[in-house]
Amino acid sequence: MPGSPFPLNGTGPRDVSIDPNGNFLFVTYNSSNTVAVYKIDRSSGAITNTANFTGADYMMAAIADFTGQYLYAINIGNYNSTPYVWAYRINQSDGSLTQVPGSPYPLPNGGIGAMLSSPSIGGLPYLYAATGHQQIYANAVGYSTGELTEIAGSPYQTIEDFGYPQSMIVDNQARYLWTVNQAPMTYPPYNWFTVYNVDSNGTLSNYTVDQTGTLGSVAMIQDGSSSYVYTAGNNCATNPCYGVVASWKIASNGELTLFSGPLNTGPSATEVDTANTTSLGVAQKLGN
Image 1 (cartoon, helix red, strand yellow):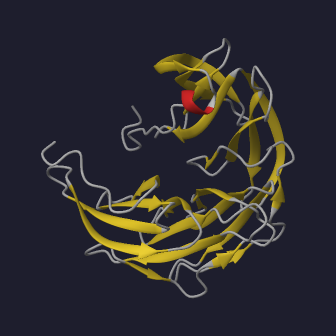
Image 2 (cartoon, rainbow, N blue to C red):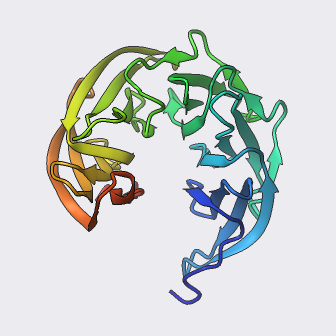
């Protein structure tokens, strides 16, 4: 693509999000503590930086809500501090961001901010935030303002998530919330998915644990048909480990069964962290 690779507009790029209309790309930088906005040329796919906004304490993850009106970002802070969710209204002409009332929103006792997921439940927007003190915070999103209101029962304790979930997504049909996890300081690593039911009011209920053995995941995404989940991470069946991608079939109760892979994506490494495949994407509209 002409112009690629495109220059970064911050230091320590950590996460990317594209608005559902495909007009803007947002990047969090956890060293410069910023969120950068890039306008997408719909004919060529080229991106142009149009604005940069300052957050705080290592901006981690970002996600645009399903309406394309709002962007939410979470900062790491440190393990003994309070992370925040930064909420912005997206200017539809240039992608510039304006903080919504009440932003940034504190996540009390949250520890390290980790992941965000923004589903539609019954046509209404919600936001889930996972943090380092094994908590998932659930919020209703004000459709007209983007403001967050924590729902009853939140935060939810995630007993199985050591440290913090490596990744978290909500099913396209708002039936399930999945996290991927890895037990620390074990070799071979001990890995699993945790599956939560998402109720009609956004609350989380019963959960099950699906063991994945030596397959560890650090990123996950669902296909457009809501039939499969794809993961990227590592396989440490042997030493050294290697980066992999895999697909998983979604059962009627939300549990995940390995469907294909793992497929090796990169060279071996002697440490789990350096063997990761760290990100992936899927064509949501076509599902293929």
